Image 1 (cartoon, rainbow, N blue to C red):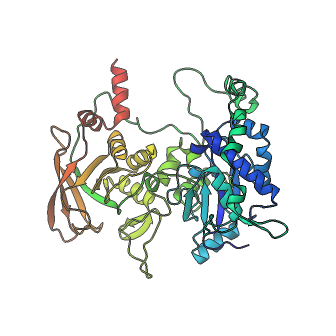
Image 2 (cartoon, helix red, strand yellow; image 1 turned 60 degrees about the vertical axis):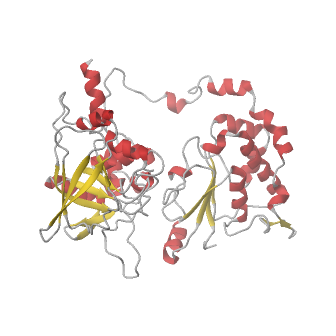
Image 3 (cartoon, rainbow, N blue to C red; image 1 turned 30 degrees about the vertical axis):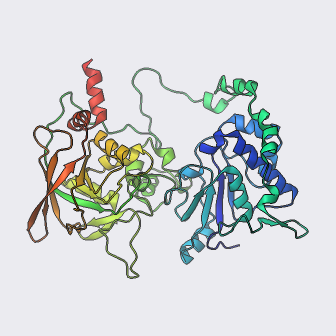
Amino acid sequence: MDPGHGDVLIAAITSCTNTSNPGVLLAAGLLAKKAVEKGLHVHPRIKTSLAPGSRVVTEYLSKTGLLDALSQLGFNVAAYGCTTCIGNAGDLRPEFNETITQHDLVCAAVLSGNRNFEARIHPNLRANFLASPPLVVAFALAGSVNIDLTTEPLGTTPDGQAVYLRDIWPSSDEISQLMRYAMDPDTFRRLYADFTRDHDLWNAITAPSGQVYSWPKSSYIARPPFFDGFRMQPAAVHDIHQAKAILLLGDSVTTDHISPAGSFKDTTPAGQYLLAEGVGKQDFNSYGSRRGNHDVMIRGTFANVRIKNLMLPVKADGSRIEGGYTLLDGQQTTIFEAASTYQQRGIPTIVFAGEEYGTGSSRDWAAKGTQLLGIKAVIARSFERIHRSNLVGMGVLPLQFKGNDSWETLGISGQETFDILGVEGELEPQQDFTLRITHADGSQRDVPVLSRIDTAIEVDYYRHGGILPFVLRQLLAQ
């Protein structure tokens, strides 16, 4: 029963991407139906789920009799909304987590979503594969990703006969015969004409009226701090002085490494905050569900369990420490604790990174959390274009090393103090600034860096402290 390398522990047909295509949903149902008829089953260790893209999907799967077959294999309707690919699959069994951690296992999730970045599906699942809905069912039947589905059987019938994927894979004609059930205009009209009809729980929710929202006392939603201290005239832009590095990162750090996503433990800064607010561990839910509460989200920024801050010392076995940690006064602590301390001391912070910083999806909290942590600049070898723009939009300065320079070639260890000079005055797109590095022994080195404030409107955003105060000033001026 204990999991091993390559074993599938989560198999999920999710609400996004593929579930808008009735062909692959019907294919998944047909494959499940044939599997059930042959007496196949899904291993009990696998957490299975089905999140239809809409109630229309549930309707046509029900009318074709395929929803029952999927349910018999464990693919019951879990929700209409984001599930596994945002970390909402829920936790694994405690004994599975313990075995995976104890033996450093590489176990798998197979899902039909569109995201499989590190630690996004589950913190303890290192192998996460995107697949079509019928292949999700197939791998759930196989129970492992260490299989060649073209030559090895998915399982055996009750009388011991091997069943191969080719034996139960639906034909195009079989799918076409059922497609009419997914193309019924009356069903769309009935289910989409009034989204709230018959939803008593939703309709019973009371909401305030008027132009100004009255913020409730809630651990899910809170008044955001982005307009605290707002004035009609933006403050002058200054050079950045006496900054400290909070992260030294490698190449291809994604927005999922930066932005809070998925579940979190009670030992994390976010978990500790909720416990102090009287929220029980069983009610933590996920970062995604609490994205309206900045106090939770900033504690999860740069807290991905797979992120590697290269400022930290190498472990005895030669591997790198993973997770949202940094050094503060020479001692290891969380990113949130260090950032809070630096802010209390009035010290700005900088993130250093390699190539393709911010690659992946456009996660708004990757930039929001960076700004709220007090990080004033990100200096990288190169940026993903949307995240670079989002940083500017939140008033964080993106700077790019020139030539062959990098934080490694410059010998930056995190013990230095930094000044960014040339920001004051007439800002222009893509101008050169100076990064002044002051080493622990007092020696200094000036390095040119390229401002990745790329356009004239981005100059305006940065001068205003970000796009939010910029837009608000425009609205009030009208």
